[in-house]
Image (cartoon, rainbow, N blue to C red; front, side, top):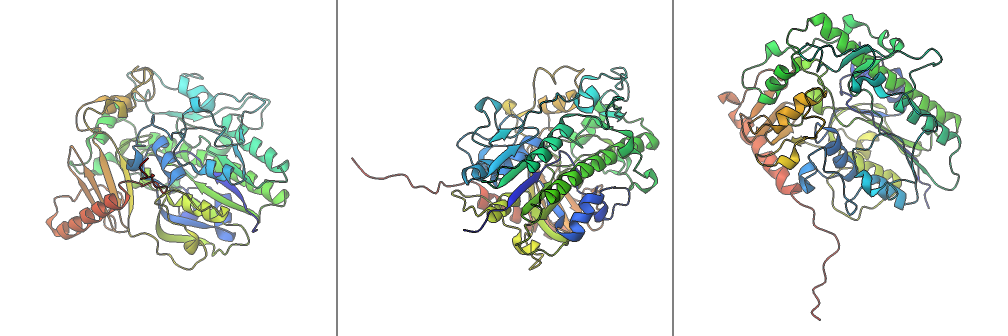
Length: 496
């Protein structure tokens, strides 16, 4: 029997696909990812998530299903016990599955035993994430409720304690726990390490040593709200109003963006430590490594921070996706221009692990691209979000975010509305065009070659009418192909 490779699923939260040095972003300091791609891995320039919010995206890439297949399109509808989850498949196939980090995948009341051998809890209690920024502690970085910083998520410097080499938070605890596992791995089972860490998710806060790496003069031009056409989604203008950040200077935005870039550099450093641990343990060559985010972040573009649940700008939907195969599998290290989706993670991991799925999913193995055989994979990628009127169970309302003092109150208010803001919407993106069907407001159409920042909605441009028809037809094909999954076990028809 062919030896199963170890598998690393390194999953930072809310990392934009353009913030990597090897993608040509001179301000992005990511030497460990850059070296991996140079030597041993393939990085996908056009990789896209299937929902721009954490839980729906994770349910999608862990199952190979699009959000609409079983209604996994909210933060509060996770994978149920009878549904397929990649971690469970790996555990059932003999992997020792170690899970260190956030959940946002399965209901915690069901427990984690079916999905992993260890749901890691560090012995040493970590410091609060972001220095307690979610609670507004520290030096009262939020300011007054009516201030321009109150909903900005911008903290700035994350100050270490005097006895610490770094700010020991949950991310550091989980990274160090994974390294300890690699040093003391069970000898009778292949490893699967799942690291869904929290950085670079806002609040925007990072230690000085990561922040100072960023040369602010090299930051790409920010997409200003002043450049947008009037027929953009109402979710964007509504959030801008509620965030109350319209008066921010470009210098202020630059500080926020540099902090976000520093957060990415911090994660790159932690990833490098993990790769070094694999090499020191002598198992780097025997390991398949997957580095990918669940979705992106505005980080100042469009005059916004954080994310939305139903808009699909590239800064939200385009994600890092890097794969290093085990040494016995062919690879042509490079940046691939293939269009790929996070649902393809499932099929690719299954291939390396020797798993034949017993259910229908929509991922496509990326091995032909990784080997250099082709860069053709998909003709289009898709993303979905939002809700219909009356679907109150699909918004993110909680007692917490109904409180105006809560950081997520602006987004919660937009979702609680029964206006057009929360509308259900679907994106189709090719290399040249993006079309978004929005149920309660104007559709969107962008010529990505002429307008990569998606500032001019061309939905009413008659010169693109043929393009629009083709994209609508392709979206219809997508829904017909993926509208359901028929169980592979037939029901008995015997009459007794």
